[in-house]
Image 1 (cartoon, rainbow, N blue to C red):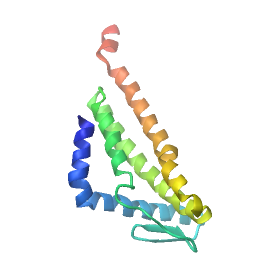
Image 2 (spheres, rainbow, N blue to C red):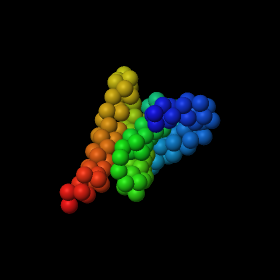
Image 3 (cartoon, rainbow, N blue to C red):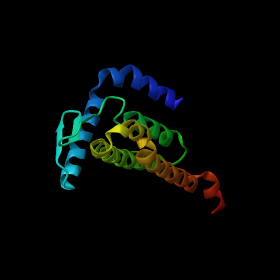
Amino acid sequence: MIFVGWQLVYDLYLLPNGRLDEFLSLSGVTIASKILSLMGFAIESEGRLIGCVGSRAVEINNGCNGLQLFGMFSGFIVSYPGAWKNRFILLATGSIVLFFVNALRIAFFAVFNSIFPEHWDLAHDTSSYIFFYPVVLTFWYICTQMSSEDSPLDQLQT
């Protein structure tokens, strides 16, 4: 039910409104540019576009900036049983980590597209598995472990 509610809010309000998507796209590009510049790459970025100098840029569109993943991640954490304090900590920490992982993913896109532009579709289609899934699954695992520590059965047995 939480996931259905999230999808309705996203599809009917957040996506058409676009402000949160725009923030995530623009800030992701800005952070990715800084990361790559610190690593010594010559980067061009403007708005939602980022690329290595002399290569085609990558555009970070709405719906491709991690917002839907944040919703799915948050829905699981909220719906899983456990202490609200622990869930809030996981939501905040996980969201911040996912935000920066998305910036790393954007940086990866810029570099990958400059080296292997003919394989762009492969990189884009598999990037969630490489970048997001390990992080999300780790936080979900932590959530289940924290929840089992809080379970009433465990408290009765002690």
